[in-house]
Image (spheres, helix red, strand yellow):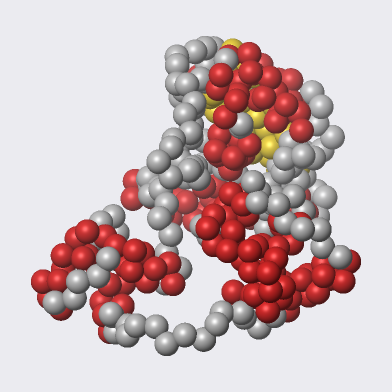
Length: 333
């Protein structure tokens, strides 16, 4: 592991000033690399934070050790002529909009239409300069929803949120999510030629039913096994006992929430000061607790949690317990 020599207080303050105020973005980033290394971050962690390669971080640290701040600045070099013109790069950007998955196809079109033979790495550099990243494509259900109903629901939630800010009401969001030993891990930074592996196996499902607001207050209920209407009603009964003011709950239209038994409790809950507001179909982005489930599954749950069901349960309980302090979501109001 590459170890950075200790920095003096003057060096730290100089690097912090460069990181914040230098006019060149690459110099700001290189100063940040040295500061992160000084604070104990490993090469791979710094590379992940700054979205660069491990080798790039290593080179910056080497230059700092041998040249100091002057090592941040690139030496002038003639270099070979550009293989692609500005027009060629614009052509590539247009192609990637039509075919965002295949660099090989772009290479073939470049060669066929412009007689330009370039490497995949050259095309990747152009796409990165255009602020494009290789990442998972999200599934969308927007085409299925009624846009007018969606906008009306969005406006009503904004009105409730304003009333909450004024202290008139509480506004919370309710939903369920399941966790098992079949890990929800799309991908991670991994050493070249090696794969990080976690065991995938069938297990009992841990379901979390939660009430959450934008202040990172969470009331979770963990159930081992499936969730039915009786369990959802019991959670609402328990939550309604501790209300301090009129509370509106936003939730989706799952069969459990729309069952006759659940609907039959709405009037009783309203007498306790709890009012349910259903979202229109196919509008998950209006239910902010969905963000919590994504954070737990894809960011906060460690790989080691999937080694056994007990580890999964322990880690899940820990995250739920520490949500609002160690773990939090920053919302814009």
